[in-house]
Length: 304
Image (cartoon, rainbow, N blue to C red; front, side, top):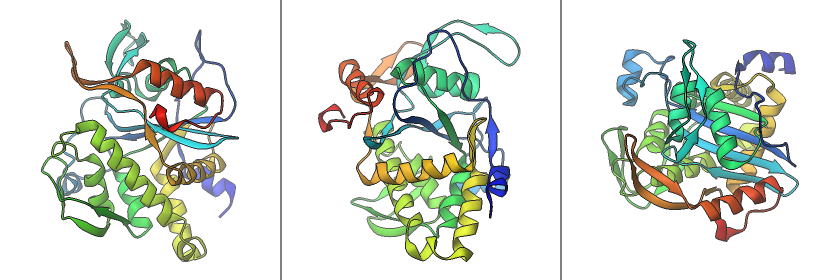
């Protein structure tokens, strides 16, 4: 299982580009991690069983996270997909020019794909992104199944008809389909998108712990299929290779083990004309958080 074999299994897309006023490259490495709602690899029966229906035109993102990995250690910050942000002017695939607009963060992905989303996040945070990683529904399910499921404990039952999550209170091991429903569920939760962000981080923590178990790492009959599943599930920027993905996985494990966080929110129940329900950041606290990441400093707990 060499580097050429591993690199050959990765899917790559144009995701990062230079532009006037792009943030400078500071200390450490910044990843944008995206969970997309693409169903292109799912059959009609799989879409029905997983309760994912049909994607909106262009696809959307269910998960947006920043991983900063530097001398101060890895830090993982969730950006609520409903964050109300400035989306820069862009040209769509038909050649039509669109002006600057304010919308939900995940609209940038739907409108202009990875390139527009990465620029939107860079301009909103002041952080230069060095790498991009995306995983769709099918890939997520395959990775969870490849590790034998993820253990999680619930303090209360979850019943969400939109995501298909029907989980009783208590501890259990979730298979890929159950884990997908768990991280997508939000309509049952009064915290909406913010509650879902917390469940996504909890599942990611469990996935990282499971994947690092010696019984898996030192068993080639289990490890090789897992590595293949991760590489085939991931879509990365054109400059990333298998070694970068390996460092990403290690960074994620260190970050979730140390406690990930969400960008500070000022109003989680705001409404924007023509957009709908949005999440407004606490600009002062968010800027302090991003400034710490730019300076490769540990994030003080009070910032998130």
